[in-house]
View 1: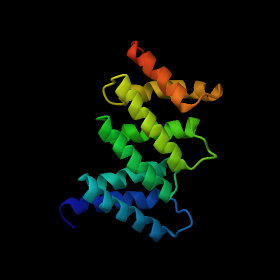
View 2: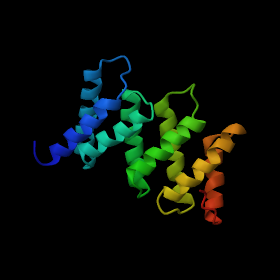
View 3: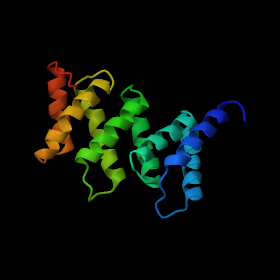
View 4: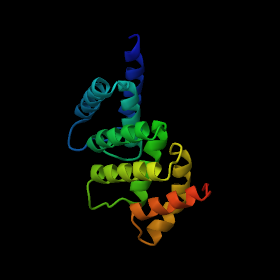
Length: 169
């Protein structure tokens, strides 16, 4: 295997180790991820390997196959929209979901909500990328969870503090 497909096959091999099936068998889960990756590449011009890498990261965060595929779309869109790297987008989405996500709602609807809010805060507070914001949110989210605050409230508070110079960490 040569060219761009070599990277894809390497990522697929890594995904094979962590993907969790939700009602489908393992082969069906892998095929669904590959199809989603190829579709993403056709629609967005990003590499299928990058998509699979993102699905692998989402799967490593204990999302099941369908959830990981859908959440990967939100993470890649968030990364592109905020001019950030994909790993940082995955990190903020998985951490915010695990800490403050409403577990009575679907994972993907919560991930979409968190991605949308993160992008809005980044835009409103004119932050450069998501790295500093992600570090600050990792400091703030446990306290927000303890006081039963919503992600939106924590995001606005951290955005305000970051604009005033707080870096978190």
